[in-house]
Image 1 (cartoon, rainbow, N blue to C red):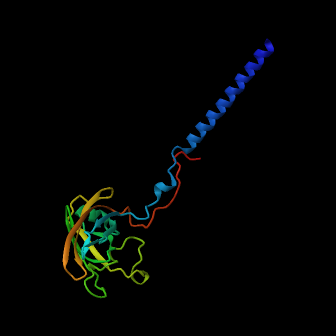
Image 2 (cartoon, rainbow, N blue to C red):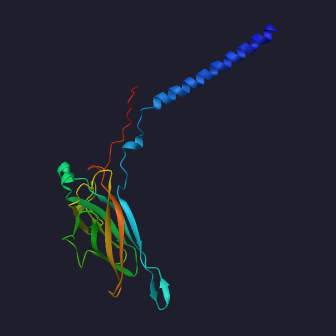
Image 3 (cartoon, helix red, strand yellow):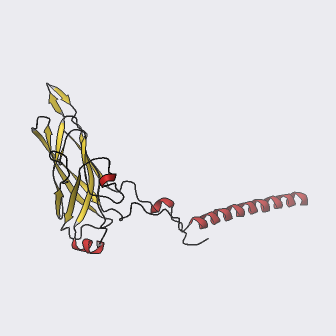
Length: 227
């Protein structure tokens, strides 16, 4: 009987020791992990802006309905000022706006008429080095670009040959700030290949402020508790 009790006692003691060891490992792992900031927490997104898509009305040719494609507005964001940021935010501008607009239609020409803001004024200035025609008119399968985001290729380094507009947002009061979004409405006219206006469309995009003037943040793991 004593031998059986001793064996039972030893089993219970061993189980308790294993359980305590497991709890210690779990607590140690939790303590080590607490206070850490994940590696991705400091990484800027590859594409910081917002986006919108406009589906164009289908065309009718000899009784057949054909898809007319879409207008894609991509990577829309307000550039963080590279100089005198406090004064610019305090004065409500002027801010530079960056985006890309593309027309993937094969039977429609699209013209960017204007950009409007819920609060403030938007001035759109076409590029002075446009090769031919109106750079605001997007022929089938063409695009236009605005602004110069941090890290973007410009000048001789930019091989895309996409017209680059200057878009300025001003008189916004206190509605533009990091962490807030600003509604910007893009207004377009749509023409068929014969130059007849067939549609007027628009899309409103909640536009964020770019995080900072750097192309990316450092990827650093920090530990508040130390080793």
